[in-house]
Image (cartoon, rainbow, N blue to C red):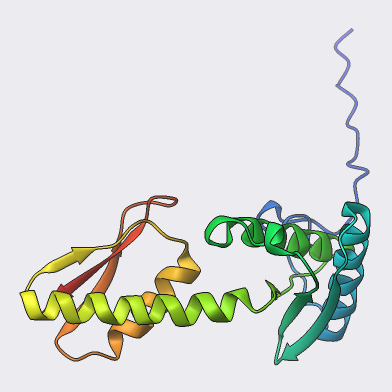
Length: 181
């Protein structure tokens, strides 16, 4: 009665998926930017229709990256406080497109030009704080911010001689420190 246990072969799809890429095959190439753009427009248009929002979605392609720009009346609800809702919308869209195309995608979603305005405003703020740190000869620690915002700050500070910046902490509490040299 010493029977060997029955071995059951794995019946799953032969293409392994990588959990870090939300269901995209682990060994896939990035999706075509045209496919990403059309799938992203279709997803967002359906989402906004289901939400009862009047919005137009336009796409643009820059190399392998796709940008989806949303325009329409009363879309502030899609941006949220400091772009948090917009970041969530972007992640939701990226995940949906990635799963649909079963490939990695590079995708950015913007609403009414918010990201460009935020980038300009944050860069101006970073430069003024850098000048203050330089004048005082000290360090100034900024509030926690997203990696996208931290990059904007680092880029702006790098333009000013006599100061440097670095990030410290762990997300979501990671912040930029601007230091006089």
